[in-house]
Length: 218
Image (cartoon, rainbow, N blue to C red; front, top):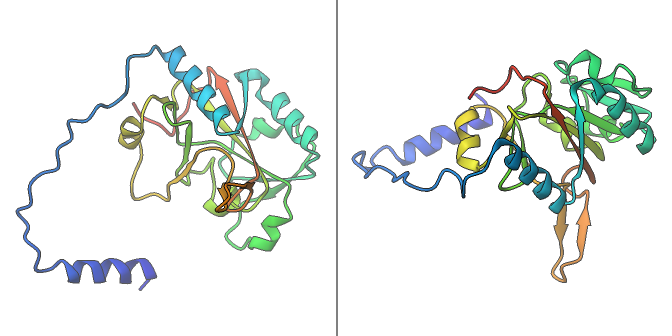
């Protein structure tokens, strides 16, 4: 029995005698704030990503391999973690040594890798949030938390939604969801911001126009 199963078992036992005729939860909240065109939604995403100190890039589908190679080169990355389902052509021009995402990979080993490149499940414009769900093009959660540099590719426009409620409709709650709003950061009592504490110090988001995705449904 896993730790998850033990915890859920205790919750179920604790709620065994709870009344089951609770009132339904009202869901009459706004699904998005205002009305935007698809282009305006993508621009809002880019604006909010930048506001969270992510570095935003835009390119067309055919320009992606060269752009990723340039970003890794500019970073001086000699190694890059590659999820098993990442599009093979994305890193075709990269000079960095590919490191496979393996179950046996340890935190110290991943800490020695310079960068990681992933896709995403969905991106939320109103909050500037990228969501990963562990799909093959994103890999295990650890590979996006330990390396210091994360490049995340977002397919535009089909992976972009306006709001959190719209994102939740596309996500499977049983999957390991990671919600990312900018690079990892924290502040002490004097509000001194420190980045790279709980994840990558640098987050680069590439918005790729015109690239379809098989991971997201409308």
